[in-house]
Every structure is written in structure tokens, then in C-alpha cells.
Image (cartoon, rainbow, N blue to C red; front, side, top):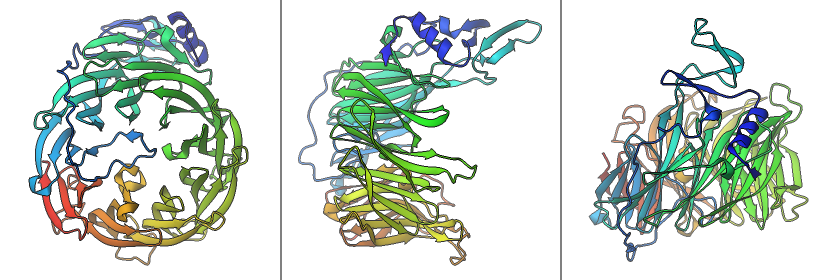
Amino acid sequence: MVRFSSYQDLERFLLTRSNCGPIYTMQSNRLVNSFGLQNPGGAFPATLGTAGSTTQTSSISSAPSHSETNNQVAGVDELDTVKNDGQYIYTVSNNTVVVVRAYPVTDAQLVSRISILNQTIDGIFLSGNNLAIVSEAPRIIYSTYGACGVRTFGGPAMGIAFPSPYYRSTLPQIQNTSISVYDLSNRSSPSLQSTVTVNGTFVGARQIGTFAYIVTSTPAWVNQTLPLTVVNGHPIQTMATKVYHSDVSDQAFSYTTILALDTNHDNPAPTMETYLLGTSSTIYVSLTNIFLTQPTWDATEQTAIHRISISQSNVKYEATGTVPGHVLNQFSMDEFQGYFRVATTSYTGWTGRGSGQATNVYVLNSNLKIVGRLEGLGQGENFHSARFIGEMGYLVTFKKTDPLFVIELRDTTRPRVLGQLNTTGYSDYLQPLDESHLIGIGKDTVDEGSFAWYQGVKISLFDVSDATKPSEIAKYVIGNRGSDSLALRDSKAILLDLGRNLLVLPVTVSMSPNPNVPNAYGTPVWQGAYVFQVTTDTLSFRGGITHFPSGFSPNTNGNAPIITRELYIGGVLYTISQAFVGMNSLSDLQSLGVVSLL
């Protein structure tokens, strides 16, 4: 990627690389060509925040051992709705951040609330005495008119016709994403230190040390201006000569902005880098790089990958490459010893019924050139999960049984399948227990000839110590058809700690009156956290914890008591819903109390 030489250069790029012409917008009864405006104004309120006093550096003293967010990469913290420091829990409840004194249990109480007005909270980061809240708020862009061709504006009487790339008859909304940093020195009264807001819908975020990295994307065909950043009320306009652009062809373009911010600095000087790409999708972040993915379609389905190096406030474009197919999620990607590994799904010989679907693994060098490939795994099957661990990779595909593929990546030019395990059901999520064992979380199934019926939630313990002969050494199935777990879609809902032989995940248990009829859905009868004892040899159920009153089910008492997160501090297991923070003994799961968040 290279930067534009001028705004006119950017305009020519948009006009020639997209399939249609400029965009026209109706503002205050005036027809506006969006490509010709760089500063229409009115994108932000006058002030979004004010700088506070110097942050105190005092921290929680003598905090007991405690769990952290279930992150993919060690040292790279992921945005989440719950964080803790070993004494306090910070959780998003009813679109506010609630500060709870959690440890010791005898002092447990709600301490304070932080509200972000007219915005939706995506999650939080915690760094010492600083809490960063990432949120979004819509701003209205007035009616945009047009199609690939000529569209009459205002009816025949006005007689205005023009070419334009897209037509909208409704009022579109474009998101602004903000990060607001609060000083927690006085947890009963957190104080706002700084707010940084940037144009764009939230794509992803990570924190490394004290630096938060926020990725946003906003459509280029809707903006009347290049992305604007506001730092404590002071606008910073992105200049066209600072915008990188990709030569990867696409049907439409968006501005992707990476914001780097030191959350421990009271007067922030954030770094912003903007890239004109197609639609930014799933991101993967290592300690040194952000990998942006961009789904494209040029005769065949492909994914463009852009490597952006990061080091504190330094954000620098490095390389672009493409791979066939599309990625499933962040766990489809991994960086190891200078190489980037990615698993994709592609279609070869599409028949209209998915029989041409296959899963592939590609190894790319630091310049994002493919150096190794392994294609055609699980032909005709859906790609459900992936995990890369050191020189090994693990994939799950499914149609009637669960093939767990064990892939050796030691030779980066020749990845190869060493072993394959076929078992009932499938895993939507894989997580290492240690170097030789995996936990899989998915669904059990019943074979029905040409397909299979999904059943209850299935937890599997896989032994991959012999890569040529992977085995399922233990499993546990929760409920009947219709049972579910947030862990299938959100890895941060899982608490896994081999040192404490502890696995906890939220579940909704459905029970069927006809459990022997595989297509019969059950009725939800219980929601809460299932607690397991897990070792490298065993998986056993210890008990369940619920926030619902006795006799109430998820169908009868709303969503507020639904447990979505679990953590431990010392010898206490904490379960968190919108309504409560529950406290139970880790040793016997006996209740130690409840803090209401309502």
C-alpha cells in the first residue's frame, strides 16, 4: 500500500476503482457531491471530554491470585465486558460500567457506576488505576441517492439526474467509536481523564501493556469527509496524503482507521493511521502486528490480509497478501516465529448444495507471500473451528461426524496432516489445556443417514500427544436438542485453569419430553454456569450455579439473570450476569453471597 499524493488523487481512485461515480447527498435542501467536500462540519459535538488531573499510580495492594480474560495471545488483552484486579470487579451492566468491591467476600458491595450517555458500550480495558471504556454512537448522514446508472432526484418536476454508485431511500447511520479513560484512584468516584472519538464502526480492539489499539471502519461511499478524530474536544482532520490505499480490487471501499492510545497518559497524543480498503473484517493481533482481513471476490472468493506493525504508539503498514477462501474467526489465524498461518473455507466446483466446500491451511512469510499450503481438507463439510499451537494446527470440520485434523507446521513449506479423529458431534471452539491436550466445546449429534441432528452441548477432552493417533479421552453432554452455550460463540465466556483443575462455562439446558426422538427440541429449563473438574485424563461435572430464583427458568424471568462470565479471586468463584455478581466457594461451590447490580 502507498499513500495518496493529494485529495484529487484519492478522488480519482474512488471514481476509477469502484463500479460507479460519485455520491450525492441531500443536506439542508442542497445537493452535495460527497467527493468534493473535505470539511462539511457537524460530524461531532463540540466537546466529548475534558482532560483531568495527573493520574495517581497507586495500585491494588496484596491482591490474591485471580483469573484474567480468556485471551487468544499471551500478553495481548482482549476487550471484554468484565475485568478484575484481584479485589474489584468491573462489569458492563445495562449499558453502564459497574464497579464492585468483590474481595474479600465480607466487604463485597457495589461501589460506583459509570454511564456513557447516548452510546453503546462495546467493552472495557483495565490497566492499573485506569479503566478504558470503548463505546459507539450513531450519527445521521442525510439521504444518499443513486444507483449504478442514472437516478432522478426530487421527481420529474425537478429534472435532476446524475450517476451515483448506491441508492438509499432511508436515512443511513454511521457509527463513531470512542475510548474514554477513567482514573480509578477513588473507585467510589471514578473521574474522566480523556476521551478520543474517531469516525467508524467498531471492528476490534486489543491492549498491550498500557497501549490500547482500536480498529474502526466507515464506508468511503457515504462519508462527506475523510475520517475525523476528536481528542478531548479538539478535532484532528485526516489528510488525504496520510491515507494508504490498497490495490486489491473490490466492489466498494471503506476507511479503516487504527488508533493507538496510551491509556495511562492524562493528555493523550494518540496515533491514527487510515487505510482505504474494502470492508475490514476479522482481525488477529500478536505482540508486534495487527493483521486486517478483507473479504474480496474476483472470479473466486479470496481474503486480502494486511500486516500492520505496532510498537506502543508506532503504527506502520508493512505488507499485503491474499489467500483463497474466507476466514472463520480470529482463531483461524496465528503468527509464529515470523510466519502467519491461516485456515480458510473455499468452494471448488460449487454445486449449489455445498459439496464443493473444503478447508485449507496457508503459511505466509513476513511479506505475506504464500510459502506453504494444505488444501482440500473436509471436502463437502462445514469448517467449525481452528487452533494453532506452536508448530501444530488443529481443525474441526463436520457433516455427520467430527473430523479433528492434526496438522504439522514445522516445515513451513509443507504443512501436512499427521492424524485425524472421527467422533460424533463437533467442536465449535478449541482451546489448549496443555501442549498435549485440547478442550473442545460444541454440539453432540445423532446420525440420520445423509445428515445429523444437533443435540445437547458437548464438551470433549482430546489427547493429541501422539499426533498420528488423536483420541477423545473424555466427554460430557449437557441437555437435549436446543441446549446452548455462549461459549460456542464467545471464547471470553470460558474460564479454564489447569492449575486449579477448573473449567466453567455458561449454559442453557433444554430438556425434551422425547429424548429418544433426535429431531425433537427441548424446552429451556435452566440457565447458569456449569463447573467442571478437568485434568489431562478426566472431565467431571461438579455442579451448577444459577442466578434465577428457584422455580424460574430462562423463559419466565427475562434476560437479566443470565450468567455470561465467570472468574475467580483467591478461593472464590464469581459468576456475573446483568443483574448480579454471585459468589461461591471454589472448594465446594456453596453460596457465599450475592451483590445486586440492578
